[in-house]
Length: 114
Image 1 (cartoon, rainbow, N blue to C red):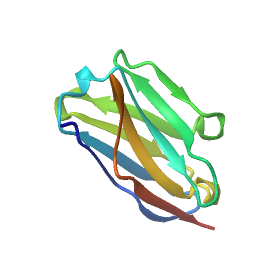
Image 2: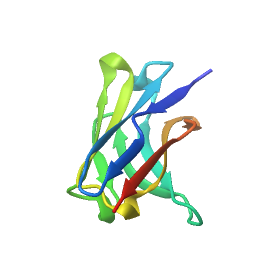
Image 3: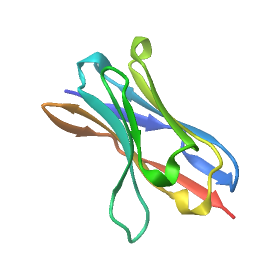
Image 4: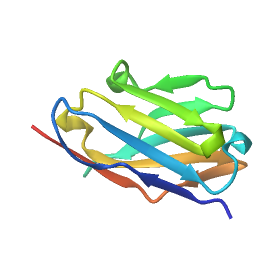
């Protein structure tokens, strides 16, 4: 059974940084794509960033230049480095990985205070 476990969320002031991690229970080389979604209260879930098996990346416009998605195959872990955080980045962040279908982590809360 594939498990994804996020960590690294927390409370940070505007302008600060956080790094989220998503650790997988299997080799992440098996996943076609991995990525991060977020969901703010009262809003729909939003795709934030993706990274493919050959490390092609994609970002939603609102985080370009501030967030960086990466992966460490040796550690079976994907990361989301978030810099210059703003209150509108406040959300629960979910990692996902696609192997035949999308697998999801449990989410980690990111709160950015103004």
